[in-house]
Amino acid sequence: MSGTPLLIKRYASRRLYNTETSDYVTLEDIAGFIREGREVQIVDLKSGDDLTRQYLLQIIAEHESRGENVLPLDVLTDLVRSYTSQANSVVPQFLAMSFDMLREGQSKVIEQISTPMTGMPGFEAMKAQQEAFVKAMTGGFGGGTWASQDSESEAADTDEEPEAELDAIRAQLAEMQAQLLKMGKSKK
Image 1 (tube, rainbow, N blue to C red):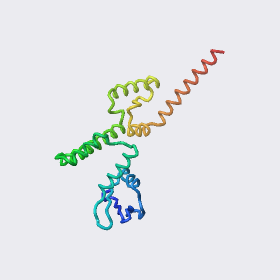
Image 2: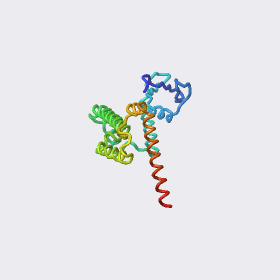
Image 3: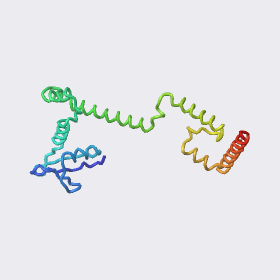
């Protein structure tokens, strides 16, 4: 998010003007800016009044009226009640804290998704099984663990004796070819 909000000016004709791109925008454009992470400030050109809250509520109302229901009916009802009760001093702080917790939870989920396997129960056992399988399939060739090598150890392995490793692979291939030839000749 940028530090300075995107300034939108509302003209007397109610048209909205994006001061950054010098063109007119719609409510849907403003909603798009917000979804992209931009902070937006909408001001009346003539009076200088901040109209941001009014327009954000209008964007929400339009989405709700199109059937894109995000706010459950009981929440909307409680919001209306909060404007006429003593609770109105607590509701804004509660909503702000709730959305902060939601954002924090979302960022933790995204963090977990970016490294999904390491936090999974049984990951270490699965990794050990994978290593044992690879070792069994390669006959122990290579000496290291395939699944747990990080980029540093891979770089070190490729730098250390790459020719010797290739020679060993070539020898194994030649041995396998010789065995296949023997098997082919014995079947004839």
